[in-house]
Every structure is written in structure tokens, then in C-alpha cells.
Length: 89
Length: 271
Image (cartoon, rainbow over all chains, first blue to last red; front, side, top):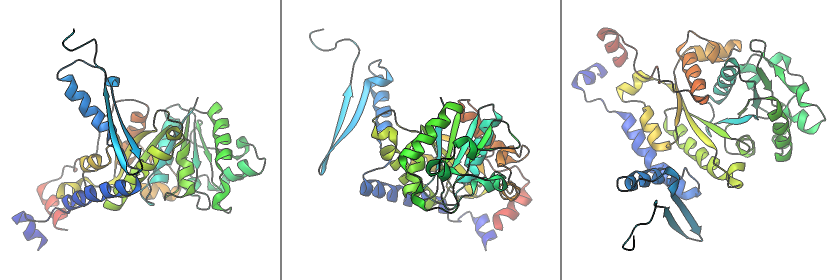
């Protein structure tokens, strides 16, 4: 039977199910525990990339933080640009 | 000043002790003075995996509680001059390791060694928290399997929030993923999570992928760290991981299925 499936190419790829289930449960675990590998470093990396498309900045000029209070969280993003931009410059 | 590296996983049986023994032996072989500490009080096994179980006189708990000097408890490896083992206690209660005592011993060892490798017990209880508390770096050992990956994610969260570095607001514990028991054939068949899947979920840098290899069992039977089995693929994969830990850029090996002819591949697939 397995041999059959091999030739027909319709064997279920269980690894995909594993990955999908893990993605969901990990997010739930993280929310439940309040711990978790923060997405902040990744967000920071992405932000740096986006800003770099327009302005040349160093890696450490983008700071990302989450401020947790009681039952709300605030995302704090600080991007320092080189020199001065804007109408007065 | 020594670097403290904790080998941890959350889930048991994924290869923590095997990996701690191999990374420790590999670092020593690379010329770094290294001590591997067993934090699994009550269930010590590092001594057995490293082949020095008959030379244990004093242990970690003796050093913390009984006025035994740490040098008296260290066991020098017979194969590598740079390698030492600090065994866990087998009989005492789990609370025997207190934070002050562990910190004191680590501070003393820091003077003498380049690397201190801490072999964590499984779980997220006191012993595991103690093993990761003082870490500068952590190696998260995981198998490409749902429960192991989930538990790894938990332990990464704990590293980010419960380590000394996190408490003091210093630079976070540098984390590495070590994927063990990787079977490239099953990955290709779509029945095992591939490296990229695990990386996507856990989002920490990859230190190495150790392929499934019969040598892991046979090496433990005789008390040899796998990394010293030069001709085995798992041994070579551990050697590569050690090089990466030392900052060298080494390509991943043994993550593709071994080349075979179509007939044996067919046999394997339908097995």
C-alpha cells in the first residue's frame, strides 16, 4: 500500500501538520506564560531593514520595547536618524 | 575569564547530557580549558556518559555544603588534559543547590577555566532554573519533533526572563539551537520537521544539526563523548558545532539524505 502511495505521490506529509500545530500552540503558550522568545529582536531587525531603504542608519539606532502595565502592553519604537530632517533643514 | 554555557532543553531525553559531554570535550580538544558540571542532582549521568563514573569521590553538593574544595571534587579526564568534570550528587535532595553556593563555586571556577559547560536537568523546576541562571550563553537542545520544539520555546522564554543577565538588565543570554536526532531521509519524505521549520518557530541562531547516528548509543555504552568518534557523522557534526561555538564559520553537513541508488531509496521509502 505504501509502495502504491509512493508512486501516486499522495502520501501525507505529516511534517507540515507538525509545523502548523506548533506555530499555533507556541503563540498560545507565549501568551499564557507572558514569557516567550520575544518577537522584538525580529521586529527590530525588520524595522532596520525598512528604514535603511530610505536612510542610512546603524543597527543600534532602532530601539524596540514593550511596556507592560496591568492588562495592556504598549509597543515603543525609537528610531534615531542621522543629522536633521524636516522643513527647517 | 570563563564563559558559562548552559546546555538545556525543557524536555528530557533529547540529548542534553550527550551534547554537554561532546561540546565540553570538543572545546577541550580545541585547546580551551573546560569543566563540565552536572546540575542533575539525584539523577547524575554525565559521569557515566563521559566514562569517569568510577572516579567520583566528591561532588558538587559536597563542595557547596561540606567544606570540600572544588579542586578536590573535579575529575580530570583521562583522554584530554584540558577537560574536567564536576559530578552531581546522587543521593542528596534536590534543594541542595542554593543560588549563593552555586554562584560561589562558579566564581571560583571562572578563575581557572576558559569554558564552564553546565548540563541542565530536564524540566523547568529549580534544578533547571539554577543551571541556566548564571549562563552567559545557552545551547537549547531540541529534536525535530512537536513536544521537544514546544518545550524548547518555553525554555527560551525562561532564559529571556529568569536568567541573572535578564534580572540585571544586562545583555541577554546568547542562545543557540542544537538540533539532534535529525534524520535527513525522514525530512525528505516529509515526515520530520526540517531545520528551517524549527528555526522559523524558535527564532534563535542554529549552532548545529546532529544527525541520527548509531554511534551515539555505542559511544555512551563505553563512556566516550561522541565528538571524539572522529569517523562518525554525529561526531563530526559535534566537531563542527564546537567550531561554530568558537566563532568559526563552518558549513552544515549531513543534513541532506545520503546518496543512494534508486532501488535502495525505494526500499527505504516503502519500509
